[in-house]
Structures are given as C-alpha cells and as structure tokens.
Image 1 (cartoon, rainbow, N blue to C red):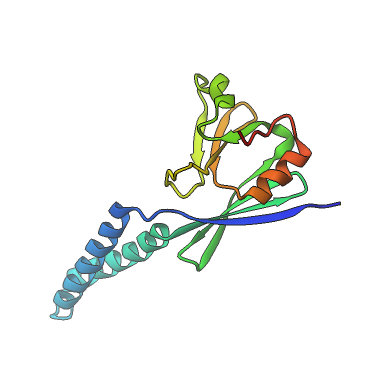
Image 2: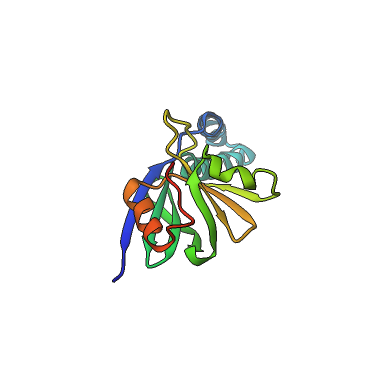
Amino acid sequence: METYVECMVKKKANGLMSALKVLLIGIAVITGLLGFMGLIVFLIIAVVAGVGAYFVSLNANLEYEYLYVDKQLTVDKIMARTRRKKVETFDLERMEILAPIKSWHLDDYKNRQLKVVDYSSGVEQQPDIRYSMIYNGEKRVIFEPNAEMVAAIKSIAPRKVFTD
C-alpha cells in the first residue's frame, strides 16, 4: 500500500527582500521617465532594475510544499504562486533521526558539522512545530510537516521518528 501526504508551508516574508523590491521598482520608474526624455542609458538602467525587481519579488514570496510518497520526501519551492521548482528529494531509508527541533533526542547530533538547510516558515512558534531531520550523516533538514506526515514517516521508521 502506498502512502501519500502533502503539506504546504508559507515562508515568512523577508523585510530586506521587500525593501529591495520597492527600491528597484522606484529606480525603474525614475530612470524610465528619464529614459523617455531621450537618454538611452537611463532606459537601459530602468529595464535592468525592472527585471531585478521581478526576480526579487519571486524570491520574496516563497512557499514550500512537502510531498511524502512511498518512503520518499520531496520538497518543492513555489515562488510567488506562479513558478514551481523541485528543490530536493530525500530517501527516508537514509534518514538517521526525525524529531522536533528542540527535542533532547537531537542532543547527540549537536556537535556534528552538518550542512543545514531550512525549508520551514522561518518562524519559531509556541510551541515550536518545526522538525529537524538528520539525513545521511551529512545534512540537517529543518521543515514543518503536519501531524499526518509525521505519522506516515513514523509508520515506516518507528525507531527513528520522535514526537516528544
């Protein structure tokens, strides 16, 4: 029997990205008006700033979709609700441990030099609902699965998944 669970998490808006977007739009408008007065250099700057504002706005409005199907967890990044990009796929046979981010079960892994990837909302809630997964001895993956997804993963690896 194949298990299928999906979960969406909206990443908290980054204030710096929003400010950069507003700045680039302002530069595009001002230099665009100067460009229409006959100065080609300003028109080129306006186009570059407009393109920059587009790409900044894509990355300022992010959502992550977690998809668990048959012992695999796939993470997709959805940018501005228009573009989807597959970020990473995890084979859960290679998972060492999955526990809440503040769990004492992760104490043995605190001093390891692991690459940290964060696919969560970036918000520490009370209680904190983020989970940390140690993957293949080389990576710490932070994400926010729902209870159904945690239960599905626990059903295939009951000794590796903790809910504290």
